[in-house]
Image (cartoon, rainbow, N blue to C red; front, side):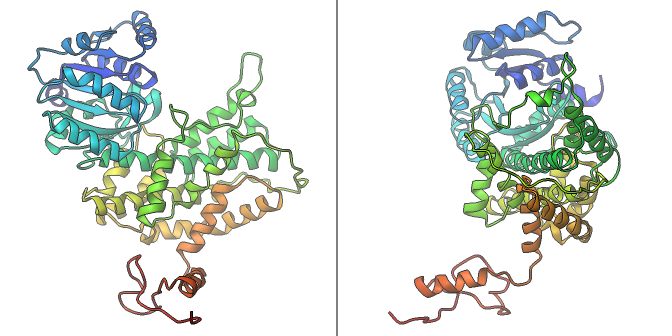
Length: 493
């Protein structure tokens, strides 16, 4: 046994709350790592189904035991006074509160709970306080990679009390995905409080931006260029093998999805309705949560990600058919250029939001650490983007504008023309391009020297005496987002 595994053996037994897709796969993974796994779920059917899977598998180093009773579940992890570690893997919000309520009588001082759900960071902060009052540590831990990575090693972003994080870090390093280049585990102590879940919230927002850009690429290649699914899959595979999108997980699985066929030979994609449900509670989940914080508090524009929810919303509503212009000649080359910019923009918007939240909350997050844990076992992993951003972020701990890096700026500028061209084509032919068009506007506005919003400020001062700042005045340009220092009497009352 290597030194890392030896240290991690402090927690020989692990209790998992939740036997759904993620919890069950974590159960298998920790058992393979030599841990005895106890698992409980509020739904008995989930335990029954999981234990049926367990009975059909062999070769695990640790035991896996399913429980229908919470007290028996907790007791199996050790004596009453033994420090225990729990991992919660259930739907965020009220279900997690209910699980904690059931678990609370079984908890003892020194126990550690890691919440692996897609939770709002403020709920995490609240539960940390509740648990701290009884001597228990609650760690909010983002888990990325889906159930496949939960089985073989995901990307992890734990946040909470530093002492508790140090306790569980050897175990998490053993479990986490490993960077294929360096072998470094894709897990890091993000910071105190709800920082770990906040980083995962932002990660999910970046994910939505990237997914939507690929969705629009798929639509354009199919309906605009007339390529069949297999040909589109070949194009995506080429993008993932070379160029700026190489080593990008979502591009890789996009190729797989395009080529997947049913037993009768038809494409699986033809059976999929255009209705997207982001989370297990039928909501849009953490991407919408983080967009609310951006819009209402942080004054950061996540336009690529925000507009991607337009088709999500319309997808669940009845629609009337509208005629679309007949297709013209489309470019023959399936180049990736227009779709690189939304990927970069999503990353920049996400990193800028983490930087701003870190400052506001006092989390002291290193953005380079976020890039490092997103290098493997992760939905948004992208080798080219990570290689470009990490050196800059190593030198600049929490930059609030990632576009100031010369390489990032050049990359966005280099793809501006092809993005503008594809958006023009999309508008002409009524394509669905919310992510692409939003990225174009984001790039235009973020690079503008004087935006037309000065006219909005003037009108608001006219009717509401809102006041305004002046260009070129120190402390005002640039300056904080606050009430301006000047007022003009446009029309006497």
